[in-house]
Length: 162
Image (tube, rainbow, N blue to C red):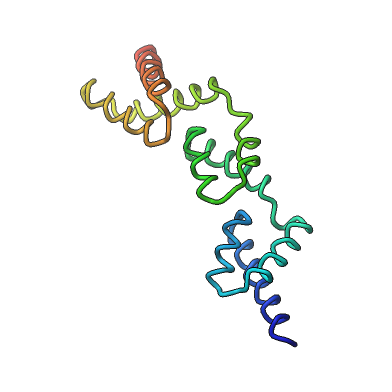
């Protein structure tokens, strides 16, 4: 077996190992192969082959990440976009994956987060509660145009429950 065949086999093994651990973008996998000192042309061939057979799919990766970040972490569209860009997903895939999220969806998600967190802060004064809630929602990536209406919604919701 020649050196290039050994490197190609090593590249395939690295890719299989990484993909078995978690989904990754092709850009992330390129970086990993580079760190493992796999020559760029061999790495590119391996990534292309894995893409052809469907083991690497940046569009599916982007959609999966959008879904999990919205449903599990409650992140905003802008925070998810930033994460996808950091992971090296092509802009077209990012835009397509995020296109389903509307401004109304953003507000509804922020409202749900606000109500949940508001319940945990009932023992705090109104000012402290609002400040902490605003900080929490802003760390999730929501703009002030969404944060403050979500806080008002939570206040009304909780006061109606009591």
